[in-house]
Image (tube, rainbow, N blue to C red; front, side, top):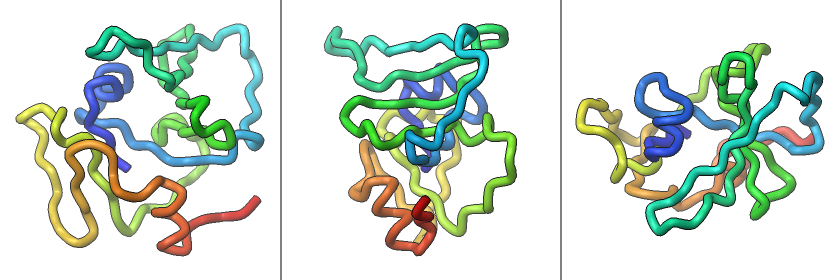
Amino acid sequence: MQCHCSIYRKTAGGRGYAINVMADASSLEVTGTEALRVYQARLEDGSISASKRHFWSACASYLWAADGHWPDWIYPFAPSIDTALPKPPAREHAFLDAAPPWITIAEGADDPNFGTYPTQSIEDWHRGRSFYLDS
């Protein structure tokens, strides 16, 4: 999923979106936790986002997000993963209502676009394409 929301765009940088994947939260192993910092964005209505974005304090690298609404999952920022990831056969583009005008958005059957959240969860997207790996 390429998320174009302003929070990801501003915290993760890059090409104007964040590339998110999903992982089983119990699989996360972290060493050096004293160097981790957590950021929770202030939303337009003044509330604090439930999503906690984890960063490495030494260089401010964005690592993963976690949200108490879905405690079984974490959402690693794909560029922070050191192991090889498969090339996705399709992408979803979320929060296009917040995308800056200089972003070129792919369109087509393999690139469904959504103004806000997609109609499927990341889990359902993977399961529907037989990409879901049970641990």
